[in-house]
Amino acid sequence: MPEFLYAAAALVLLLTGLGLMRMLWGPSPADRLMAAQLLGTGGGAIALLIAIASGTMAIIDIALTLALLAAFAAVALTLGEPGTKTRAGEGEQ
Amino acid sequence: MSVVLDAFTVITVTAGLVFFLAGTVGLLRFPDALTRLHALTKADNLGLGLIVLGLLPQCPDITSALKLIAIWVLVQFAGASASQLIAQFVRRNEPGP
Amino acid sequence: MSLLVDLVLVALILMAAVWTVLVRDRRDAVIAFIVLGLLLSLVWMRLYAVDVALTEAAVGGGATGLVLLRACARLLPVEAEGRLPGPGTQIAAGLLSAIAAAGLAAVVLSPPVPYPSLAALAAENIHQVGLGNPVTAVLLAYRSLDTLLEKVVLVLAVIGVWALTPDAFWGGAPGSLKSKHASGALDLLARVLPPFGIVVGIYLVWNGADHPGGTFQGGTVLAAMWLLMMMADLADPPEIRLKRLRRLVVFGPAVFIAAGFAGIFMSGWFLSYPPDYAKPIIVAVEAALALSIAVILGLLVAGPAAEPPKR
Image (tube, rainbow over all chains, first blue to last red; front, side, top):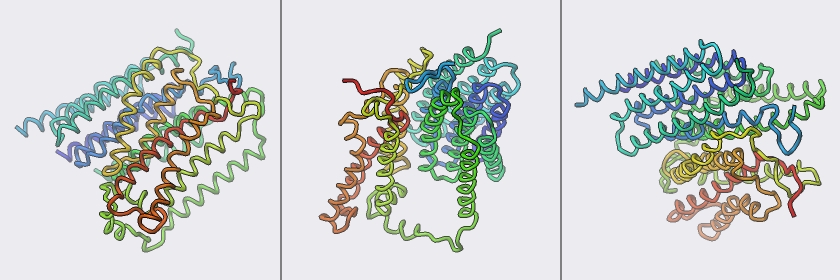
């Protein structure tokens, strides 16, 4: 069974890694962020598969942290948006 | 019994992999940002969900099994919120059809 | 099979790193950097360095992206006014980065043979500390002075950021992190996620004594929850003149230093713990540090004061 789970983890890595092509192509930051989002979910899946396959339960906590912070990049994206106004300066276009 | 559980794991994890494949193919091949987002959420929901489901019988104790389910629920919630935020970003920054 | 995984990981990391440097748009570079952080977390996991992988997941996934995207937002008005750094500054910055990278590469690529290691000696005596997690034991018992200085550096970093405050705003609140575009999804996320995040943050700190986890990982998760509430406009960045806030910033390092001096009386040396009480002391120090780290990281992201203090 561990061999199968390791192979599944490798496949998830390969697939989400291929998804990173979208990070290179874009065209919009949202598209690039989606590639990061997929890698985050895939990273969680890889962590869970390896945790069970190797019997290292502590690795589950990595997936827990990734899951908790999964939406952060999407929230932060609006920060760097032109037109987002900070009180520090006028970001209006 | 353990053979049945192992078979269950193999089938559900493989199904999860199929959804990751679908997510990647959709992300790379779909024509615009919103449809690509649609593909992405399938990997979030079902890809990870099926892998978690498949791993449950392999958990050595109940605590780690509960943690696995908690992780899936968190990813559901974070993924749904993130895709709303990304979609709103797309709508603001790209002239709609 | 594992060789294939390693090769794929290395290829992806190189791609993300090169792309981070090459891509012209700043925001795209930040996204690539977030991806790089995720990949590095997977590498540490692959090496079974779970503590480091947790730190990378928390810092790379949460804090770094926020800091950098906020920096991007701050640069927008500067750029609009055409106040860009001249070619001289740009070349100097590039050269310094290249020198730093070359120096790191030289150190990593030419390790001394045999590699100096105290691991065997440390592992032999680890039971005296009473902690199950060797990483925490080394950080808070063997290398406690390094760890202490590392936390003091964080306090200095806050002072450094605050020092950028214009005179007129001194004592006021940092610029709002609030997104200009109201979003129900963000509001919901910032109301539902923090309770879970706070539990996970405390869990990581508490767990750090015997299993992978620890102050920095837990503190970063707590800081991320605070920042999420700030971005959803559920919490305002605090005014930097507040005494309570400043006490929280120095609380962790102060407890650490106090424990260090107590060591002189209890077992003879600064930062040495009496064997019977080592574990409770370390857990108390870690809890205090996690609180301070959470506040410090939140303040570092919020930045210098951007409005005059309210009277």
